[in-house]
Length: 446
Ligand code: PMP
Image (cartoon, rainbow, N blue to C red; front, side, top):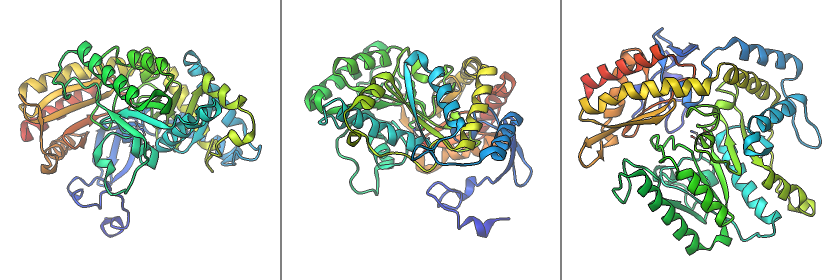
């Protein structure tokens, strides 16, 4: 069924794209933490959509909020002085959720890539308003992922996404990620590694000149790059360096926001307040697309106090503050808070992590199991000693994922990693199901 129609639906990672036929999965329905394919196979959603179905599927509270909003006002724009109550409700909700970070203003958009692009433009706008228009460059980390728009692709630190574009945005510089398992210094000590990374950052800033740099952007835990958890203390030192050179700090919390790492914000988990937050995914948990760029009082005041309208970048989307998306987000955030999902992610994630650790002792192919909260990865290696990753073109990760699927659990193969990002509503029993399925899969394919 759908085999002919399927060829017409395309993007480079779609089921019809080369190499993906073997892992074809057509999902018909979903409820709670489970999905069901068109042939009726039900399985545990170990992937959570794409890091975003944080409150589980088919929640009656979210559906009711969406239905009520559709009755009242499905859509209206927010340009030309026009707005609607839901956009105020959600802006108020987000600034009070992030009052500790002194977040003051929210610019809504349609998803994570938009949230990043908006943040980059806001950072440049801030410096124009602050009278330093020469600050236009961006610093970021290798292995980072910041969406698919030109700015986000350019600050993204994974070469795979840099092909076939022609020239990317000039003035983007990538630094080594604070990654204990693989780093250019072969350093296994978290304090030393942090020092190496911070020194490299300072050298880069001094080389470029601080007064040319607009912002540093990074994910509090790198997701698409393979769930790279920086050492405790790295983000605090990063904040200090940004403060010393007066560089804005943008946290791309598209994945880490709203509880995934076991804290409401990934950056809060590191004890740091960024200047700008990029939010999407978990904000509306997959029910309706939504993104938000949230900026603190420092950025807001500079922009709002800048003389003349000419200082304001013209930037907004047809769907900025889509009423039905905002209504869905408000209902999702009610669930996140009522069910204390960040705490559940911390608790169940720690248990899952602990139960998965023995796999790296039992199977030669599992180099490391790592993660924070319900954001985890198995790093697959060809050689445990050298930590050489498996050749991603050989499809071993996909075969392991396929076997796990036969055991009733969907996990996500990405290159040489198996990624886990289940709904934050995952129970400890369900965590056990993931462990068991991976164990069986590795026995067959490892
Ligand atoms: N930033 C990060 C950290 C992400 O993981 C993603 C998506 N995986 C994005 C930005 C882009 O979000 P979207 O796909 O909604 O545009």
